[in-house]
Length: 384
Image (tube, rainbow, N blue to C red; front, side, top):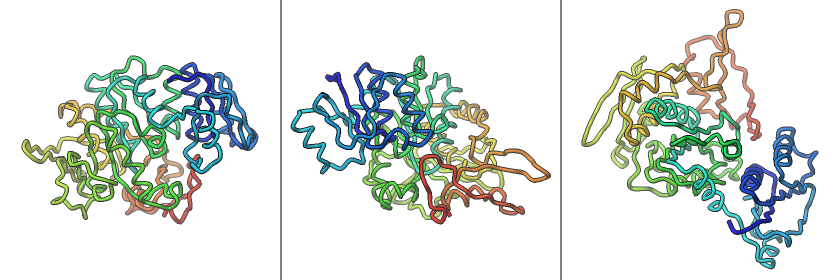
């Protein structure tokens, strides 16, 4: 990166981690935003305070910044190319910092095999399962997911600043759509798509296609792609070498003739069956996990498929999964109060809510519904 003075336009979810990362690399960084400090939420103020404490210059409440003194610039993805600032960039011959710039920088810093997990649902749980398996296999794993911070891109940068990745020989990264938008040129050994459903469409002008396009960035990021057969027809384009998995309980309409799954699984009355199809077929029934949520068996299928593709033995996979005790906020048992069992689940769509309630469908239940998502205002009707 042949620049010294950099300006980041926009103190939003992309601008903040970019500014912090570049500052950590020794660049002189100023972050500019039209909003004044007091207009940010308390959580965002705290993040801006961290930037300031580490040496990033905050230039807030500025509508028309003078960028002539800088030799590099990063612009928030929400700034249209028709904006006047692009003319300033051209006139001053300023280097534009792109998604590839930031991705390449992180590739250099986290210089190890990386496994990336994206999808609509199940990313965090699948990431957790894979982590348990690879740790059991003897890998020194650096893992980052939304369990650290809601915004994974900021969590990754925070871990870089604090050196959390040092000493690891494998990185396992949850990659939500926002993180893909910023780090869509990471180099992954294995990429995983858990599923694709109508989720977060308000951030894509209601367009499922735009949402899928973002998720499909992972197709070009990874050496090998493992994907749910459910999303095969939805992907922006097809990789002929895609390795499909199929949790049959959720994929009744899957076209298994068109997309032949290598890995198939099903769950019925407490019995989980996993099959490897193809030249070296295998059927296993000796895995069970500590969960009350039936949707976790789809995540389990993805985790096993990834592990087998990386060369982990079945016995190690089994031993690793014995360490899985669930994920906070996913049918999490809070306790029994006045004889009533209480669970917390962070589901926020009709499909995921139905799957969460499947465990207690024959019980008398009280549902307290309300989204506690800290970054997105969701419509209750859209959420089911």
